[in-house]
Image (cartoon, rainbow, N blue to C red):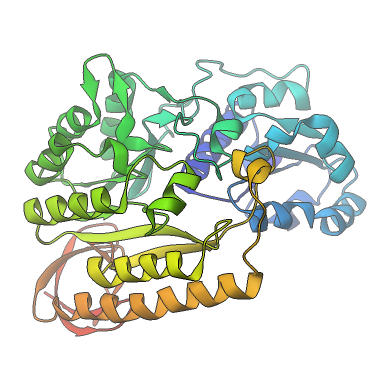
Length: 419
């Protein structure tokens, strides 16, 4: 019995897929290397962990029918499962559009999957918390460990499907998180990613996210701490202080701004202003001068005029981001924006706005990278502490930290000499 998981979406989905793998292995399934290994007959399972944040991610799933038909013809016993964010559509609608799928399982119920596949199967049901670990010996391995600290979101940005797909925000107990971090470090992890839809709104008893960061910083071992994705509204002065004080915090942060215009931010349901965001960046850089900063932006939100978009361009020129994740607005079913606003910015205009931001970004990214030439940087698996790709002149152990001297800066990467 073999299984294969295909994951769409963010790091939280990758963590969910790790959990799903533990569920399958606890029920006696072995991981397959590729789809071909599922075609030998028997109870093989193909699992798609889906994403609803962007229309393109959903379109990739809805476009699978022909491929799945071929797989089913080669192995009629193959079971095909859909889990993840797209389950918010409901089983009836999904079955109409994806008739070749055998089961649609909400991620919070993924521990019941073996029973759906085989009524005689056994499984270890410990917790319905998304990201809970079922098999301590295999829970977190590799040099990078993805550890959810919370699941769901209470922010309800008008464009976002996450609160509908993942539910209201729930924070994990500190003890569980700490146990996972220690296990990951014991298993050789050199990079701990703390995950949450609005990770810095974490709250468990008296422990907020800044305290959690400090607690994890005390865990013995040589490793970096990273986190994603924070929300500007909950980015406190104490969190900035904790980031500066914790020597294990990797000097990189992705802080989504989404738009450089206050009116657009208001329509998006983002409870901060451009001025607040700029002050926040200034505080972060004052306390952590060597930090690399990236952001997320949605272009072409309903009603966004050319003048309003110019505000986003101006923000890019002022902040000088190291990287940005740019996306074109696409209406998500059931969200407030889809109900209230007409998607009135033409596709070509959205593409043009993305291109304009990318041109600014190329200049600022190169400018920032050039400042690193001649500097000695810490490297893990081809990336610096500032999360910049770096190519070294010699082979090295990518599972451990090494030092390198940067001798060349490109727009999106660096080149360095191994020390």
